[in-house]
Image 1 (cartoon, rainbow, N blue to C red):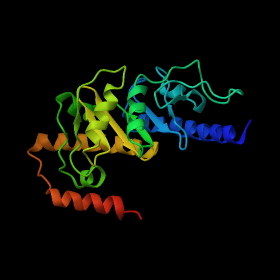
Image 2: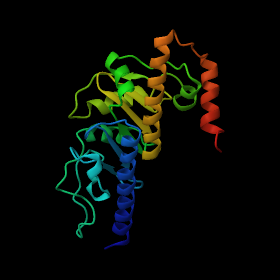
Image 3: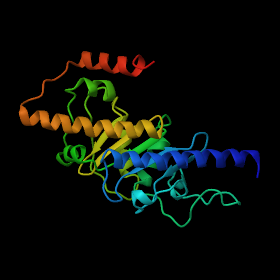
Image 4: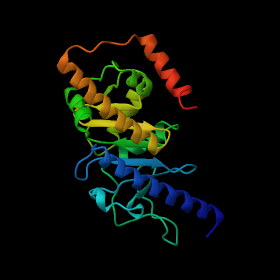
Length: 234
């Protein structure tokens, strides 16, 4: 095995393990049911991604069951030693959407999709989540936007994600009548965004049952976002 191939295999095995472990966070935070939802990650230095297999229960996922595809969403067979690539499993039905994001947003290293209850309820109404919490200013830099309705199966969802998030600070988009997709510099960051998206979707929904939430001034939102992204935790 060449050094180049060895480095590729090492990178893929590491990302497979990470992506598998992160799926447990989706169930931990009750963001998914049955086999719905998925996490993917770009393989750094390679035009490859790793994503959940289609239709496999969360408690049956293993690092070896994670599917490797190119950035067109086509599964790859692996090297001659068979150390990566799993031809027996198909990638998630959302693979084309994830792949489109990676092709068109080079800074994105992870993508997550869930059908978490409150965020998906906002998506069902086609309504953005207004920035009425300092947490939203910190994490999302403003409103969580709504993306267009699109059918699963090709890159239409990916196009909606990219077109919507390019014009927003937000790492989350509510795809109309579908549910949230989140992005991040890596897969862990994208999972965090999915968890926080559901949390604020729930809180703002409850707030609206009590009355009209108070808006936050746009300049204050920018200040919150800048502090959290560039100062907090440094």
